[in-house]
Structure formats: structure tokens, C-alpha cells
Amino acid sequence: MHLLQIWDLAKEKIKEKIGTTSYETWFSNIQAKEKNAETIIIETPDDFFKNWIVEHYGVFIQEAINDFSQKHICIEFLVNSQILKQETKNRLSQFEQNFKEVDSSRSILNARFTFDNFVIGKFIGNLSSTCQRLVNYWQNAAHLLTCSCLRNYTAGFCVHFGRRGNHI
Image 1 (spheres, helix red, strand yellow):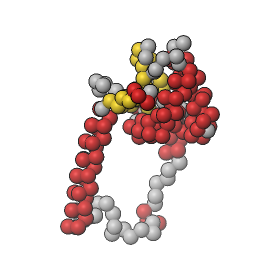
Image 2: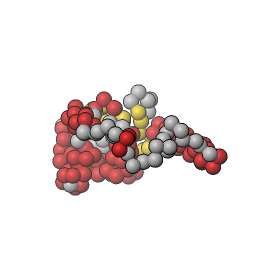
Image 3: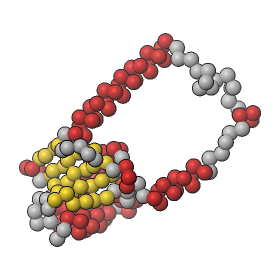
């Protein structure tokens, strides 16, 4: 049996286990591809999806695949921003069309407080700079994590993390 056939069977089992709503939320925008006879690639539209699926459903995915395969199958999770379904893009576009311009003359907000004249004081400036350093630190840490390969054969669970084009 090919890996994609195994994946189709595994998806049904995952859907039964996690429920229709969770399945539609997290699995409707992912794709699977065969890398080789022992490895399946699961592509997600962004890092958030990838991380959520790995963290919350990685074990379920591996178990479901193992249930339908006679050999150990390794799973790679990759980001592919091109897979966001056209239907989702259309819904987002329709949703954005419903936004209305705000008539500033009828606004209850104080006109003095706008982004154009916002001043960053010393305290806010220090806080902003600290936040920026933290963001940079965690982005670097996340990059190191997504480039690493986690293998735990004793548990029968093999997961690769990476972005499209990274050598893993």
C-alpha cells in the first residue's frame, strides 16, 4: 500500500478520534506527499499550523499511520504557504469586503490620540525595545528548533521539523 493511501485511511481514524470540528479546523488545509517509501511529508500553510498539529496531534497522526502500515513510517512536517485553499482565500476576501470605512467626523475617539502623533515616552520606549529583543530571541530559538530533527525510535515516533527548502 502506498503512503498516500495509508494517509487517507489514517485521516479517517484521526477524524473519528478528534471530532469533525477539530479535524476541519486543523486538517482541511494540509497536504501529504510521499518523500520516499518510508517517509511521508505533511505540509501546512504556516508555522502556527505546523507547530499546533505537531504539538497537539503528532502522536495521533503517528499512531494512525502505524495502524495501517506494516513498517515504521517517518513523518516530516513542512511549511508550504502555497497550499491555502482557494475557497479559504475567497472567504477571507468576502469577509474583508464587509469592512466599512469609519467616518472620522462621527467617531467618539479623541482626535488628538492617533498613530500619527503618538509619542513613545522613556518607559514605553524601554519596554518596546525589551519586547523587540525578546521577539528576536524567540524567533532565533524557534528557527533552531524548526531546523532540528527529533528522532525517538524507541517510542516508534519519528518527526522532522523544517521549512520548505531546508536541508533536514
